[in-house]
Length: 168
Image 1: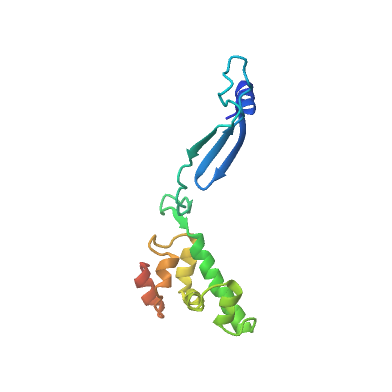
Image 2: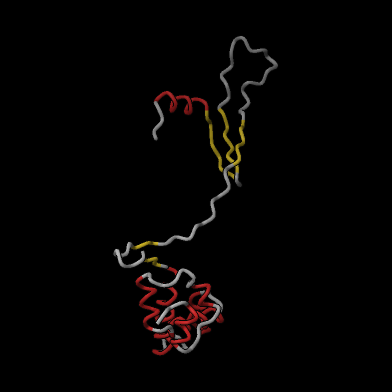
């Protein structure tokens, strides 16, 4: 939405400066031009500052890409954080096997993470292939999140399917 020429002129002629500072907006008005009718003791030349509180920032909402399904299937929900975590686990595992990193401590230092967190994420690389496929295609249960997987992943694939809500 654009401003009219009159509005732009009024703002340009009356606003000296606008400062955003700590959740507030400070608007300084230009000093008024001295008028012939003003009393000498009135201070019309001092700039006026109006302080307006800014609205609180909105919390970051979880974003999902919903891929429409066919008439026989439900819509897909791609969880990018989950896909990224699995990709990191596979990449870190490959780099550990190849000797790029000596151990998980070195991975943690490289990515500025906690060593225990790196070890928990590495477990994502041991998910059953059909579960990984479902995650990549956005067919995983809504309850399957990075946070949920960080709590622990069963070693046996059938136990993983049961724990994470995959019917087989």
